Length: 144
Image (cartoon, rainbow, N blue to C red; front, side, top):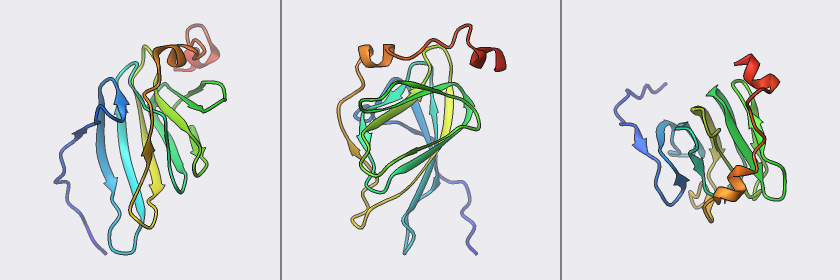
């Protein structure tokens, strides 16, 4: 058994990987023989990742707020607390907060043999982000 005391400060999401203000808390980091990486990622309204892929896929689990996600070529989807999204290995995608809501998710993945967690691409354009369905007046909004 190993207990890791909280000694890591919350980090700012790098501007190469994110649009808007994003904060990251490390939950698990690859070490020794483990390839598991997990982070609690906090998105401010409108903040989002850039397009990216993961060599071994990624699962995100929404813990609070309202978010959006999209795989390349698919529709923008609304996600909310308790929702889990799995992105296949190599699937180009993005995720982030809805325009008027904060969103936090736990991001879980396995790094590849070289320790690479993700390959980052272009930022999601304002036009791509604006293609999201409205959460106003939806059943989703009434539940929150």
